[in-house]
Length: 304
View 1 (spheres, one colour):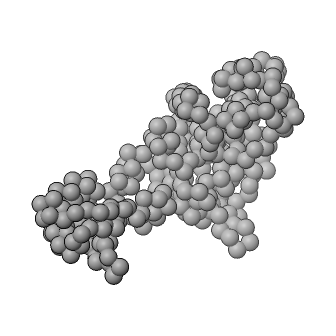
View 2: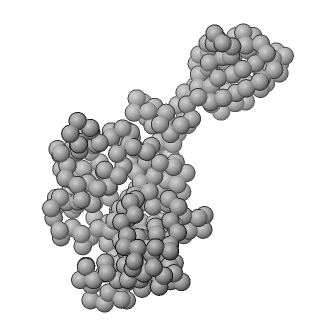
View 3: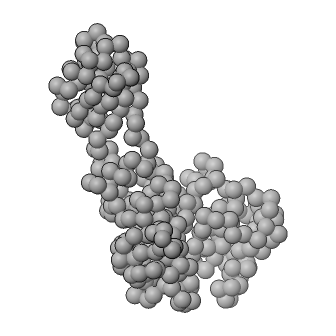
């Protein structure tokens, strides 16, 4: 069983810091690398796959440095987000070529097995130029699996897949994790991670924001303060009665009309708001969350 260890790793490009003092261990099983777009997920995967040197700190696979160590590629399979494919080849030719690069004794048989794993048998003899985004993702997956790596790194692997393809890939990742392989996949979509991984690593703006069991981190996300703008036909009355409820942390009347409100208990707030409005004869005209983006969720995790 293999593990990747990042120890105080930073990576910068001139005056831009892409990854800032990150330490984490990715062990056997399925781990989700979660963060908004631009958080540094792709840079971290490039560091873990040995394609990028850390500016400071170390990245190792089973205690061996990843940078400038060709031997580690026997253990690693990489599915990059970028479309680095040879469009003039057929899907099968592309996977066979990777099997030959790995020096496998029977490249054709290894390629056929990997293609079957991702359910691309029917399209393997078509040129890649004719593939949809989802098919390209699956043939990249086959190429990364052809040498049966102990470590699989996937950057946004579900992009472009239809629902059936996504379910199949999720099942495949869970199966490989159960076999004891080390599987890491990145995503900016909470639900994708929730369906596949229990262990997650959260990154925000290049920083390591949270690490651990998905359930515990999801509760942190759910329990964070929620902010809303309310518009009613009697803002002053509703603001005063809501402030008396323990689910509301604060409320402020806006100069242009409406209420800016912060709820500390979203479940209770969603129940008491319509009830209190009805009891006091206040008509709700608008209820708009103002911090529902993933960026706001992750920013809360950084400060928690």
